[in-house]
Length: 316
Image 1 (cartoon, rainbow, N blue to C red):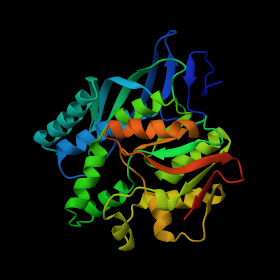
Image 2 (image 1 turned 180 degrees about the horizontal axis):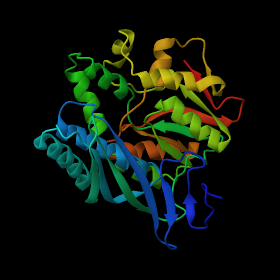
Image 3 (image 1 turned 60 degrees about the vertical axis):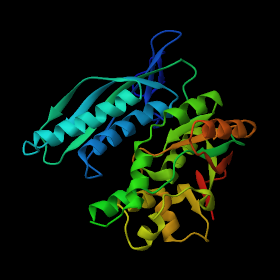
């Protein structure tokens, strides 16, 4: 049974917290369905629209699919200048076109704070979809983008002068997960998720719970955006970071060597974060080489073991 309504063609529902639903049309094609939107995280409206679109399409890439169409989902105040809302939509459309998909409509409502994103339809071959519930003991965990976008965008909202720190975060958020997804599918990854609002520990926790395994995550192996640790040390962290840390509870075992800064970093909510891929040990070198050939930096950040009592064990 998948989701609330059993159906033989609903290949992936919401029972395991997968990134997108997958519905089979026939033996060759299944639809991938997802939606996401959020308030501005950068000042430039075009860039905000493009980041929101990349973030929305990421769920399709996380299950190994290819986006084909998207609908704008927007909430704009009546007071928002037309030029600003047009730039947001233009940024979203440009990123969707980069993905080889099309904007085919949408819906806008009046709201106090601007919000924008997409409802995305993608396609995947039935049986080739990558889920979050099928990681296997002995797998290696690979991450395809550095952490810290939540900290950087919070610092921007607080009026910090960020310069190159912000530039690096924006470049990361603007990058589609398309290449990482294609490499993941070619490597026949066992499971995957994209790292977004719950931080790397939260998303790994969900994946491990669904798979009945334990994820061993190494703090020292994690790639981090420049300037992020310094910002954390200065007290900059989104409210969502603290909520994520509180929600870990007994599902996460932390090494005593890790301080508060380390824990906050690993619970930092990401926007348009990378893919966290669980792949057989014998396939990891090929995956890393394929990612590198596509200009994507893949980093081994841990491994999957038989369930040990905690969903995630974090080492130093």
